[in-house]
Each structure stands twice: as structure tokens, then as C-alpha cells.
Image (tube, rainbow, N blue to C red; front, top):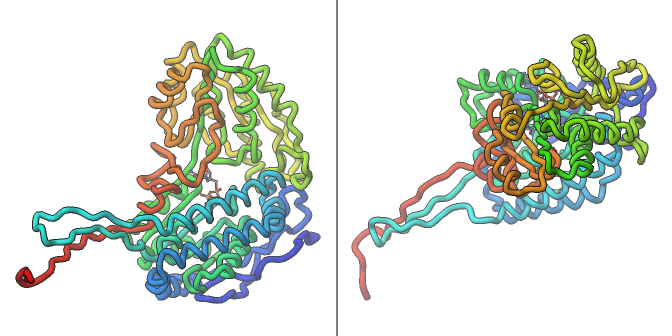
Length: 490
Ligand code: NAD
């Protein structure tokens, strides 16, 4: 294989305050599989032990440094991320196949998240209460959770780690970060930036490589006070089960099967444009991507045509090109899995308004944007999370049935409603079983200052981002302060 690595990030994993060289596995460039995109260093069980020990040692001093010092370091990191936008964006495009425009947008978002939590660090961290004893000063105060494991997926190599690591650090925690293998290049870059900005070396540990090497040890490690995980339901469930004995606090952000309801009075051209972006952006590899379009019968045909035309207009190709709208999937396995779902839908006789042709992995891990029309809500393609550029339109008799169909899924991450009647939009929004609802917007998108997370099988009890992040990464203490002795009046 040829090597396509431009300016290289640090080599190795970052454990116990220094970069450690390790054996590597080579990863293909999703757009040009004959090229190596990265050499992912492989950590072992001892590395995990050392990482947890180092984080445990570093956590108290990092807390003692104070919120404003920690915020200042995060602010510096945000500036460094912005300054290196192109380099960071190129890495993501090279390793996970994200289009260069999507990659740049993600870098900007990671910087915004770091800025947000830099400021959030200094926000109030407790409450003062009246005591039944008038002389007693009674207050609550948050302290850091302690040592946190952050396990992240490949689909947002910078933004998802940033929305875990930034609040964890802001509120005084030390971290062991385990990214997905194909995102490890971006992880090394972000780790190097955070260290350069001033994060104490032992407070940020990065272990990369296949989870089969050390994953089970990490998720069951008694030294972890919390685990924040984003990824599949399968691995989320594994973490829930394996961590029972050590019982860390768990934050789980899992899969989705996100509906967009289109009512008869919606601006159909706007709705179609927005749905195409929500379904096909980032090759459909967003947990919040629009997987099911639920259109009421009178406008189903028309919105179907408009969406098909929008998909037809997308440019599929080299993710480095400024004009590409849809790049390859992240891996040959992902391409095969999504293509198998499409083949099954073909066998079942579904109507395709776009896509459906299988591509060869040797030419890049591409899947053409695929749109199925008038799909039965019980079909596998509409029920499972197909993590790629595939979306299905289901016809509903009326608004009530549209809502029932939207909620008829074990998932509950995000949802959208398109209507010109905001009363209906808000009413449906309240009844949608999803953690995030957009009225006249794509199912995708999350701003850093508001909570994000799913209901039902899409998430756990703790939300991410916004003030919700503080709830996960800190624990409360209630303190009673009495003057002691008798009151002395001068
Ligand atoms: P994944 O579950 O396969 O992997 C996620 C992470 O877990 C990776 O770092 C992986 O190496 C690690 N992992 C796997 N097995 C492990 C083990 N035994 N021990 C420790 N770590 C282990 O998910 P993925 O393929 O990287 O990402 C796609 C999935 O993530 C989709 O289901 C998508 O919906 C979901 N996702 C959810 C959100 C959200 O916020 N809800 C956001 C992005 C992605």
C-alpha cells in the first residue's frame, strides 16, 4: 500500500505523562483503499493500568488548579484548534472519508465546544441555603467526579471527544480516552493540542487500538469513577453489564432511527431540501441522520419526487474535493453492511427512487445515496439503524398515524416535524418520544450550550453538553458551617 500521510501527528499513545511508541496497525484511506491513511498505535493491558494510575495521581492537583486556570487552558486549546483547522480537517477527511467541507465544519464545532466549556468552568458550582439554625451557613458545592473513561466513535473524530473531554477537564476531572481506531489520528492531534495548551500530562491519557486488546479491562476498571460512551447500542449494553461490579457513573449516547414528519401544510420544497441534508449529509453517518420520512398521504407523492430530485443533485465522490457532497463510508465493513441492507430491500421488492446499485470496495467505500419510497413501516430497512446514506419514506393516513409511526421504534434520539402551523409543530414535538426535536429543521445538529441526548434505547440518564454536562462530571457535597461555641455580642 502507498502511504498518504501528510503532516504526521505525534506517534504512539499518551500514557502517564508521555508518548509511548507501540506497534501499529495500518488503516486504509476510505476513498482510496490502496493507500494507508494512518498507523494506529496499539495499547495493551499494562498501558490501561498505567493510564488509570496516572489519572488517579493527577486528578487532585488538576482540581486544585482552580476553575479559571482550567478554563484558560481550554481557551488556549480552542484557539489552537482554530489555528490548525485545515490540518485537522485534512486528517479527518483522510482517515474517515468525511468531505472536506464537513471536516472543516467539525473543526469549528470542536473549537466552539472548547470555548463554551472554558467559560462554563467558572460558572456557579453550588447553592446557598437557609438553615433551621439561623447561625449556620449551609451550602452545596460540586466537586469533580474524579477519573473518567471517555470512549468515542469514529463518526465525529473531534467534536464528540471535545464534548466529553472539554467538560470533564473544565470541572476538574482526569481522563483516559479511548477513541475508535480509525479516528486515532485525530485523537493524537487533539491530545497534543490539549497538552500544548497546558493540560497536565498525566491528567490526559490516550489509549488507542482494537478494543479486543484492552476494552474489557478499561470498562470494568475499578479506578474509573465515570464512563462517558458514545457508540452503538451493542457496545453500550456491554459497558452497562461489564461495569456492574465497579459501578462507575455511566453516560451512554447510542443509536437512533430518526423520523421526519411532513404534514400537508409544510413548505414542501424547503422540507425536501432540509430532509436531503439531514439524511445524506456526512454520508448518513450521523447518529441523528434522518432515517425515516413520514409523510401524510396527500403530499407523499410530491415530497417523494422533490426528495428524489434533491438526492439526484448530490455530488458523490472524492471527499477532498470542495464540491463533493457525499464521500465514502468509513470502512469496507460499513460499506458491506449498508449494501447488504439495500440488497435485502431490493429482494423484498421495495421501490427505489434513488440508489440501489452495489459498489466495489476497491474503488473506495462508497454507497450511493439511496431513497426508498412507500416503505412498509415494519420492513427491516425502516426499523434498523442503517448507518449510511439510506432513507425511507413511509406514508401515513393522517397526522395521528404519522405520530404513531414516528414513535414506533425502540430508539428515541432526534426527530423533526415540517409544518407551517407552529401550533401543530409544537404539539407534535411534545408527543414525539425523542431527546431532541426540530420543528422545520433537520433531525441533525446540536449546539454546545444546550443538553443533547436520546430517550428510550438511544441513551441513558445523563445528557451531554450544556449545563447537563456539569451534572455528569461533578458530584455534590452539602456543608453546614456553624460558628462554634456561644454567640459573642460586643
Ligand atoms: P461502536 O459501538 O462500534 O464503537 C464505539 C467505541 O467503542 C469505539 O471507540 C470502539 O472501539 C469502542 N469499543 C467497542 N467495543 C468495546 C469494548 N468491548 N470495550 C471498550 N470499548 C469498546 O460504534 P461506532 O461504530 O464507532 O459508531 C457508530 C455508532 O455510534 C452508531 O450506532 C451511532 O448511532 C452511534 N452514535 C451515537 C451518537 C449519539 O450521540 N447518540 C453519536 C454518534 C454515534
